[in-house]
Amino acid sequence: MTIDTSPKNPEAAAVPSPGPALAKKRVPQGHKRLLTRRDRVTLAFMAGVPTVLHVALVWVTALASIALAFTSWDGIGFSSIKWVGLDNFRQLFTDNPQFWPAVQHNIIWFVVLILIPTPFGLFLAVQLDKKIRFSRVYQTAFFLPVVVSLAVTGFVWQLVYNPDTGLINSLIGANKPGHYIDWIGNPHLNLWAVLIAASWRHAGYMMILYLAGLKGVDPSLREASSLDGANEWQTFKNVIFPTLRPTNTVVLVVTIIEALRAFDLVFVFNKGAQGTELLSILITNNIIGESSRIGYGSAIAVVLLVISLAVIIPYLIATFRKERRA
Image 1 (cartoon, rainbow, N blue to C red):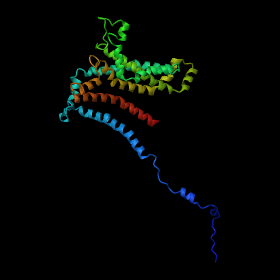
Image 2 (image 1 turned 90 degrees about the vertical axis):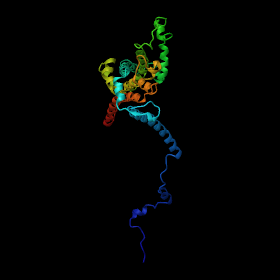
Image 3 (image 1 turned 180 degrees about the vertical axis):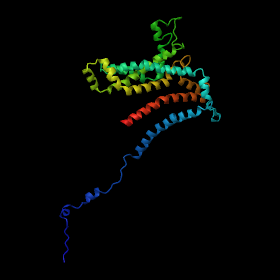
Image 4 (image 1 turned 180 degrees about the horizontal axis):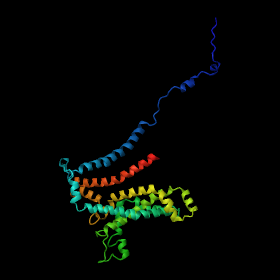
């Protein structure tokens, strides 16, 4: 009796059995780690240290300021912290003769920045967007004040405003005895003198923002406007400027933040005295000044934080809504 061992399916006989090499390839080799232990330690160090510093220097201090705003503390020992409720805010709004002038100066700071250096920065951006000769040199020259520290900028402008040897008094002949103009010490002039220095820096910042916005304008819009017979001003007013709406929103928010956090220039000029009071200066003077009223200074900081959030939160909400729609 013979047994038929031939396959019933002739096509199956044509398929060769997997050899030892193919079987070896099909054996799972396991998951290979892309990062070594040293790489993971380095990555954890590079991401962990900035995170810890950010949390400690930003979030912890912000929450501590909010908590200390309702207390009275001279900074000597935690046992001297006393809960006073809303007394700091009540005293701030009613009894402090410097608070409302400081708020007024911050508002003036914003109005000046939005009306003078911002349009001037837009004008510079439009001119540089025409690809004129030496545009890179001009960009560097106008943007250089933004790169330089505000403290250094303050020292430079102190030399410009010096009553005796300053550039301005020398040009107008006010550097002689009896004709001096004290640009820094005169309470009717020092705020505007500081604002000129701030505007000099802010114009370069606005120029870069608007120049980035102009680079994103579709060139076909310009071509279509020129074909319709529009001149350069009409093209800018009716075609280009409306497309800069996202940039204008960023410019507005940045300008408000710049006006609220103004500190360095004023502190270098005259430490916020005699007509240049700002909220940031009041915070510094009360927290690390001679009085050391940390609770009271924290209350001013909370007021400044609330004003800042009132501007930033609507901007973030509008940005997130735009991203969701996109």
